[in-house]
Length: 376
Image 1 (cartoon, helix red, strand yellow):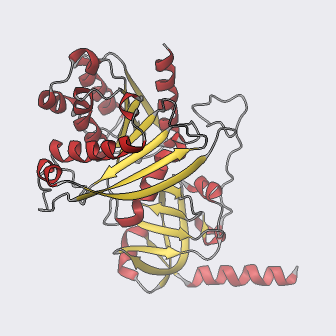
Image 2 (cartoon, rainbow, N blue to C red):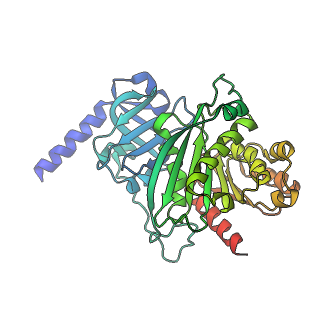
Image 3 (cartoon, helix red, strand yellow):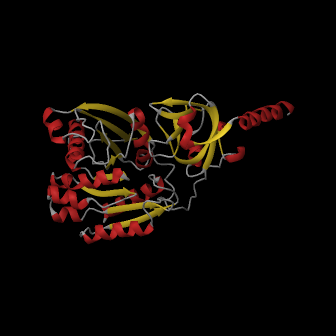
């Protein structure tokens, strides 16, 4: 007992000795042992078991706590999402972004060294949309492959604002347990807001962690740039290149129910690509859009002129975080009204406790709604 008290005292004195800084200035303290504080925006765990706890998320000031496999339980870390927290350690740079490599689960804690929040138990009587079925199959496989584009595709995509050309794309694929390519599969096509290098696995996992247990296939494709001002031609070329590649292994994918998903800029990318998929006879069955700054369907419809009957019956689910300062409840309703006035027949809005980052519970409600609509 005395030894335990001595250990606790030593740990607390270590925390107290370290300077406390806000996560937004962590990049200014590389090589220093400090306590970083701030609000956790998201937690993700990749198939290898490595977990990433992210503070912020606008790229320039984003800070990450990295837990190697076996150091912490990813499910327990999820309880920190949306909460103020702090972590003590030595700041290092990874791909020019500050991070701390945690050595123990207790490195991440609530302010003042409080015990971490408990992960809530599933309520048997709860709506499945609010609490995913824990008995459902979990994600079975995930891979990221690089696909070279043909010179024709590179030309069709055009140049990004930074001058780069798409000579190849990265395609992330997550398959659920029991995946059977001989049967029609629901496919969630994710449009990512921003990534850097191998962070693509982390970015898609936020969607596949919801979609895979529900039995959905999840894919995401990106080129060398994710600038917010990329053209419609860029997005559609990359999306079709990915789908054409998948058609080699899954010839029937064009007839499978296809759903688009994105948050923030990713939502805009999804809208800009939607009409092209309908025009090319893909079985587009719905769109999940988070933190929509501006509806972009009109631009896509005007460019590709798909079947009006098919386009307008695509159900649209838009959501926003109650703490999102850029998209509030009024803005969400206004966006829904604009989409409805464009003659879309099924539009649903949703809100959740949190900020501008994609909310897994909102996505779960969306997938459930899409599945219900398929049965009607």
